[in-house]
Length: 522
View 1 (cartoon, rainbow, N blue to C red):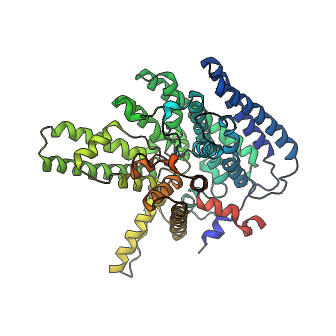
View 2 (view 1 turned 90 degrees about the vertical axis):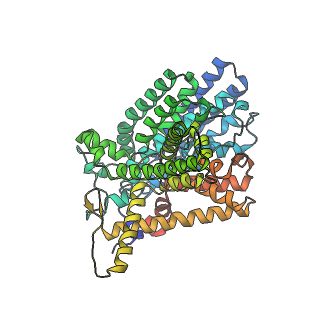
View 3 (view 1 turned 60 degrees about the vertical axis):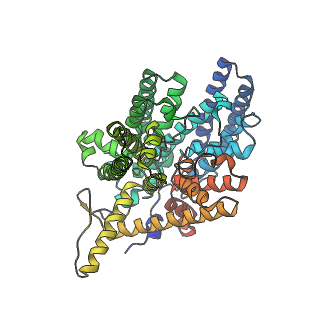
């Protein structure tokens, strides 16, 4: 049996690549973004924020020039340079993005700014701003733009960096009824094997695939949200938060504050395709829209969502009967929509809260409805998407394998294969799923213990740990309640959560592949 360590240390053709130009280009993109926000501050007359973004633009250009000079020849023959590049982006990127925020009245210190920017770039959606009405619009816009950029980077890195290494969800897919040792790129790029390309060429190839659909979905979301009654600024920020499944809201009341069914419906139409793996969309482009109906991850998402909705709806219905409500039908439909919206929102790790959720939970009498949402956030969305969590395919295989083992207790000699999407699941695939889940749970436990040691209550520490590692920042207030958000956490807790967000976004197998000494020596 091929072990998980052998799998993640597989072939990597990134030797001889120079990611220096990718770093320079990323810094120039950040400089361009700061420039756009700078122009926004000039138009709105926000001179305090404008000076910060002007300084940030100059700093990014300086860093880009320095990186261009220092990176020449520095990365020759570096294996795993792609993973190192992703890690550098998530660790150093927030510090650079935080430059315009330093000195603003709405940001207390560097720790707060770094946390907010790390949350945006990892598409987590955790925020230290407890009252957005006191935060400058330029800061809210910059945070939204970074979350959109972070989602784009997530998709590009999945195709260009994680897929060639058979990690990030691809390690399971290529082992289902396949015998290849690495991912077969034929199903990703029919015209040319991207596996043989260099790192920079793969990033350009992946960017071309992702860019137009990503921007198109964002533009359509902005248009329809504005048409539904939101002002253009709020519509644009919500669109960025939706297409990246970040969950940032430009207003203190969030989605629930609008109390509009059409707004919530439009958001669902965006976050669902955003949480589906990019490979599913690529397959649909080649084979037609019917390929979505054959996608196993979509099946698993539908099963999970409708199972949770059915449970909550029945509990709500029984709650109405117990209290002898005189308006059962109206409240039942409110509960149904609230349960559906929240289930989709949290299984996609977006974290938007419906206006119908509070009324639905009150009507049902549930004391801890957030526990169900916590389970959905841990499950997560599709592989190679902006959603976090364990991922649907892994969770489904884990459940199927567990059921198969229970059946074997009654019939030890039985040998029943496990299927996923009509294909046989190999024992190697099941082994790597178990390895990943164990690493995921260990990471949650270590993070929760670190947060508890920093002074948080254990319940809050566990909720914050799951929220960070699953990249579902709004989950904390759903579980712990208002007043126990990230703004109350100390410096140590915030840095622990930043590390958890990065590990959750990169996934534990990718971190192990990057840190493995044997992998670097190969």
